Image (cartoon, rainbow, N blue to C red):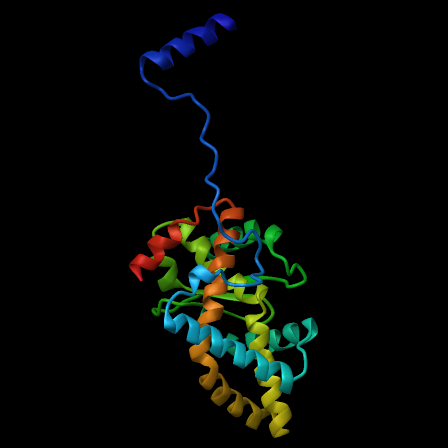
Length: 238
């Protein structure tokens, strides 16, 4: 046996076959968790960044002083309602692409902080390139976006970004706005209408949430075994 191994080693050496071990994975300087406690100052350098940060703080101050705290039960309840409301409007796809999305999601689940959320992913037939999420951990990816990415790493980052909106309670804030509007108006239909207006007012400051989701998304992408630098390729193409 030793003789055969020696012959194999010499053959590999002569023909230039690399039998050295794979290099260790690169270590990155980003948050090592899916919940972002504070955005690094170096990410907030422009006047626009500072304005968005200030506006986000005002929005949080308003919600925290004029609305009730949103519980996990609230998130799951409203999330199920949102999923059911959109089910009749969306063409859901079940094929090998859906399985790939679920496999990526399953690789990320061990690293989420909010493991009480039953994350699920849904593929939607749509010619618009989009991905979104809402309370309850439901994540939607359109077929156009699925076709747009050039690698599974890019797709993983998109999914991780959407997970992170739930991890950092951005979806919870949406429910908080809705409950506040309903409480103020005393009627669900009127409250929903008022919430749309309220969301329009605060939407310019939601860029803060997108940055948090990017930072947390990089962590989840890397932790699940994917290359987080491929997120650059995705954004470059956009």
